[in-house]
Amino acid sequence: MPGNKNSGSRERLREILAVLRRYQIVKGMTPVKLRQIFEDLGPTFIKFGQILSTRPDVLPAPYCEELGRLCADVRPMSFERAAGQVEHELGRPVGELFARFDREPIGSASIAQVHSAVLKSGEKVVVKIRRPGIYAVMQRDVTLLHRVSGLLKIAGGTGEAIDFNQVIDEMWQAARQEMDFLNEADQAEKFRKLNAGVAYVTSPRVFRRYSTAAVLVMEYLGGIPIDDARALKAEGYDLNEIGRKLAENYVKQVVDDGFFHADPHPGNLRVRGGKIVWLDLGMMGRLTQRDRHLLRRALAAAVRGDVNELCSLLLVFCDAPAPEDRSRLFADVENMLNKYEMLDFGSVNIARIRSDMLAVANRNNLSMPQGVTMLGRGLVTLEGVISRISPEINVMQVMLGHVSDSVLEEFKPAREMKKLAFELFRSGVRFPQIPSQVAELLKIGIKGQGKLNVELTSYDGPMHALDRMASRLAGALVEAGLLVASAILCASDLPKGPFGIPAAGFAGFLLALALGAGLARSALRGRRRKP
Image (cartoon, rainbow, N blue to C red; front, side, top):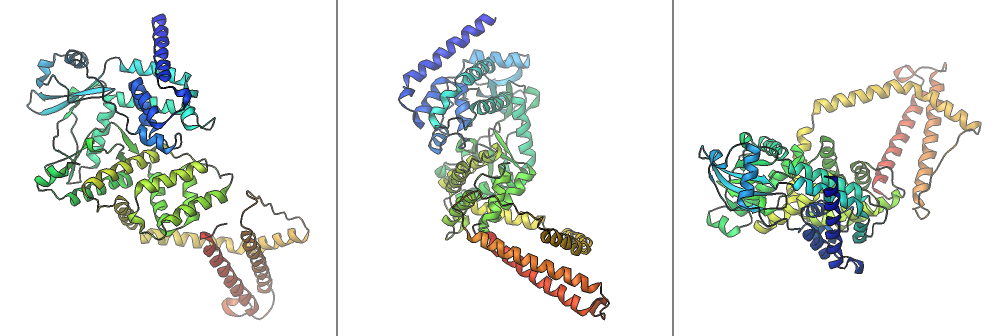
């Protein structure tokens, strides 16, 4: 009934305002206070906070870190209500579906809870059950969130720079996907298929026959929690081997598959039968083939200290137009790389790199795509897990090694030779046009019709860049003159020399070639300098 719906919304709005008053938000906001507010407001706000924790472009780092600690554990549903949901979805009594169905849940979260069970076939399973009515509750809260989105700007002081309505829509889209257990089943099967060839990795099988959008039945895989070092050692496991294999598999998920676990915390990782077990595949990150290629190039550029390349890749990653002050972006990236200049890049802490990169992006109003922010958070979480069991293993070192190997695998000499031959052919086709084009350029210059537009984006930019530009321009004009003069000499009746052209013309072309090589070398040396 519309009246009941509006009445429920008004009542919920009063609850939200009461919580905000209880925490006295008019006196200021803190990271801990924001986390506590979201926990008190329930599942929608918990999910919203979890999404915000991956968006350092929206909230300052301390808020993101605190929201990452949000506890989604809530009071479990009664057995009768949970069993009723299963029977409603599967159309049969629980006793007919399962040989055993434990009354007490093994986990209870804001959206669903999990019970252990045994199928009639004797296979041990876990049954994930969506809370009845949770979709309608969250949908109502999202509507209210849109109404009070202005209050969210208190935390970050973002003013009009951040569109919180867009962030709320992103959260709602993620929540709808998470509430559709068939989507999680698809992801679990895709993950299992992609890692089928990895001998030391496994994940639960999905029982499609017993799964719907609100009930998910998966294989039960026990094991030792991956951060329980004492238990692992007692079973004879080598902790360094576990840490190394965990890092290698995660890097493989990111770099090779572009489909990675977005929340690799200890609760989602086990060790069983010599294999690493990945659990809870409801939140997965994705990187397109383009993103993975850009990531490889960015890592290579960072290792080389190539500031220009890293700036360009950062703009492409963010799908951003040219910044208002490119010199500031260049300086920020250069300062960041200078921090690691005296260090082995593979020994650097990922959390520190992520923090520095996000600071550069925020300072230059660049917004990272969702896949990249999820990757950053996932890598930091994984690094924390590995540091507990095998501090000697460095995730960044593993990633750099994997990227280097993948670059070599992608390099095909025959393909590169074909590309080179094609470029030489294109250059040869265009070469005869150069004299006429240069002559036209000189004609325009002689008539005073040429114009040079220069845009200065920062008055305090280094003036030596203009000096270099002027020197190169002068050199280019001299080279153009040599090419024109040589072309004229080639068309004259002078005695023929090498290659059937006059010796003076041939010498002019050689001189122009040498001058062009010098200009190219000067340009390459200047790539790593501040413009």
